[in-house]
Figure 1 (cartoon, rainbow, N blue to C red):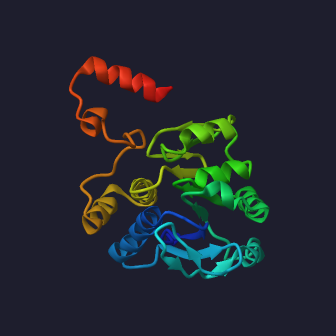
Figure 2 (figure 1 turned 90 degrees about the vertical axis):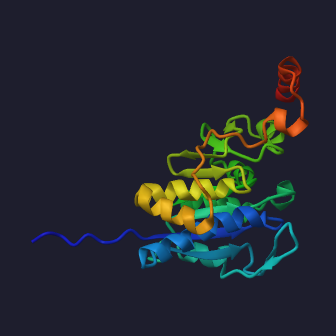
Length: 237
């Protein structure tokens, strides 16, 4: 008798940090909802967490209710409700919201085989928790210089997203959409990714190494290639 093949199911905890970036959070979450709709079953489930279980205000001023606290999450670690993936959602002023309890929770989840991720400046919190030493990661271009200085052991890149084994990081904004579409494609196939793309009105999945910023030519309106080369060198340093 052939064994019954169980459908893929993956659960997430989105850990919301004050001043988190709403666009990155929304574009990470909604592809999962769309995938469930296309599949006809709940392949992806999620819950929202904060340090104390209280609502968290995003950087745009919208307050978001959560389902659980980190203390409650830690109680679930050894049981069937343990997530498959824990994602840190942060944004501006990430340095203000360093929390030893959150660091410990992330380390414990990772050590138990849970994948961890960071949206926008979430890599900063993962690095502060000691999880990014010798790991490839991505962070928003505005935060990259300070991050590189603060965490020299992390291999940070100005990419849209990076996946290094069980660690997922993205630069924020709509890059979260590309990272989650990559995850969905790895779980299922390109056909499902294409259907989700049509639902969220995007015409392609960008690769991790696509640029974060507009090309200088478009950003500055400069056409002289020599001038552009000089500006690129200045920005790189």
